[in-house]
Length: 148
Image (cartoon, rainbow, N blue to C red; front, side, top):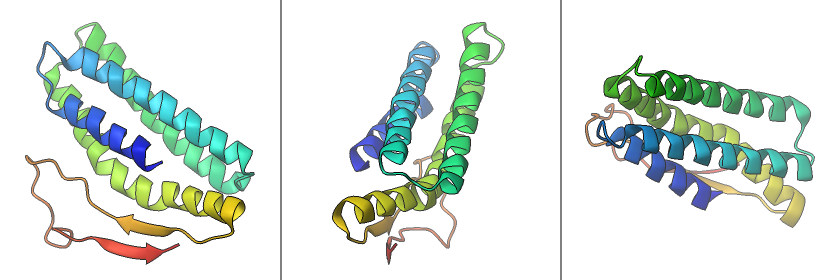
């Protein structure tokens, strides 16, 4: 899961930093990564009998993110939105990701770890902050370790 998350950061930052000439390709890379990553997580949920109530919430969030990405991708492809809107999508993904990883994905990871190894996962919380964005005073430089 960590490798998948590193790849997410890589493709989203490429989208955030894309030029007009590269934006559609970067957007396609984000969409492809999200489809692959979300399918992988859904397979893990199915394989480990992740409780339906939590799986539904997790999958619903994935569906909402994909819908937003697909909408921007379609509008950008026909020229109805420009680079600014694409960069705003990237920033929205940057803002969304830490909470999703810290809560949704960490609960899935803890479930998988408990089911397969009988152990307890350690969750490191970290903030993904783009250089153009000023972090809030409360989250600047913080790394927290929690047991799930």
